[in-house]
Image (tube, rainbow, N blue to C red; front, top):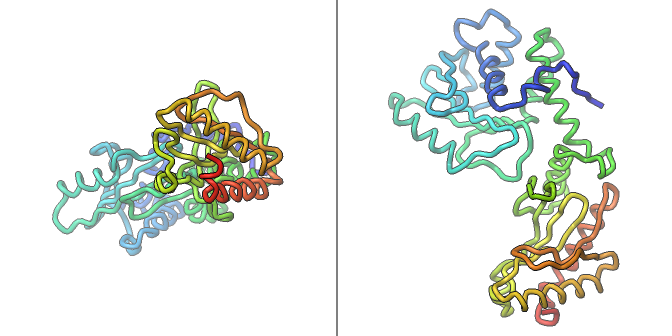
Length: 325
């Protein structure tokens, strides 16, 4: 098991600003005036840049800018600018990367290639729009591991060890009981559900609430169109879907405007799932905007079986709505 040393710099310098500094430091070895200072780090920096197709033949860069036009790291070279948007545990917002592209396009000479990349060391549930390349943890480790074996640079080695630690934590859902899963393990588990089991999420991530929050994976919506087709109006029920919340798989509903009808439908749906799934349980029913109809527990050993079971019953419900509701 890969453990992070208690004196690893990046165990403490976890902010995006610290990571911006590392990216800038690494790529500074590709500056024309620095090419001979540390040839191993120069080779690593150039391999990093060569991952981008239109930069695959460059031999150096000319300048590194921080927070120019609010861009995390801006790399300038002969005939190109590289915009690096660095996100660790957060996401971009409001066409952020596309806006950076447009701002720089208005300021550089005609013919300058502007390349936008996302630097993201943990998994997220959706692909970013407007990027030409994504530096994921997998890509970064693929570049850096071989240099780690030869490097005696403490900054570089600490950073690679930090990435290795996140990787090990992300894969820990494979070896730990679910009670010991942390946020990294859940990210790895959710990616596994999507990529290996074909469970398509509408969204996944951490949900914060006054009760302490939970890890969430929402999937298998019964659409508004499907509800309309069988006469279930928004007055009664807005949506119905499945949602993993930490160690349970819940059947959820978004209530309509008619509270009394919403309560009735909720009870009817619980009764239906309870008949079909023996260990289907419910919490105290309280009326709200989004409500849990009921749930089943799962663990690291039976999650495939439990997901398939509740999906099967949910899919069959689509054909039985009129009888149930």
